[in-house]
Length: 333
Image (cartoon, rainbow, N blue to C red):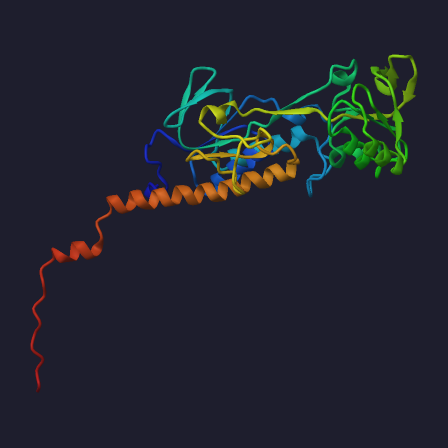
């Protein structure tokens, strides 16, 4: 087989792209780049944010499938295009894009895609962590339909919890907002009342469970509000240490700055998915990965062309050194 010199990395020992993170964003980027005949490695430690959820929703043609199944299919697809998969964690990325894995191996790359996601920090209320992903939920667009028309609770443990409750009212007529340790202002109380949402005053003691099901929310003073599902707005903390160590800047809200394609302020570094966008659903993250791959491949092509031009002897230059032909007279006979 003839070697394709046009798509050969500048250093034969280097990958065109190393993708850190094998969620929907990272695998989508790897899939597009693999199909572009790029040499790609994906490194992932196997800790998906949505691993606790039984099903994934809102992904056209894959609605209701298990998140683990989607990722398994994705891994198989990218591997089919020659993408290398490493089950490991990235300890650091050194200048020159030397990607150091926790087992001691080092990968070299021309470009980097970081798709490491975020972690959800939950309130320290007994039962919240234990029921997280089953009947303690976060995203209405991911999970509210499955608990529609049931008694729903919203824990007032976050500044955005009131808006969360107002939103959830469209899935159930029975929504209780638990004020917990946050004071409601007059406008918030009017909003909740206008939407027909009950406000439960008092500090939450625990979530009540029975037979492996959520049964209600108990306040410190002893009253229990029967609930079938509880929504909580977590503190979302991006896994962006690799990005900030590379020099990527954050915006005023604390998230790494990127353009519409995921390109960061550091040359050669892209970031996609929840590591930069806490609102990205699985399908959104997958789209961001594909968009980054398009832009990244164009970036690599530009570099490949410049390298090829430096190494190429133009035909016009070569013709100057060829012997000139002497015109011959044309016979008039």
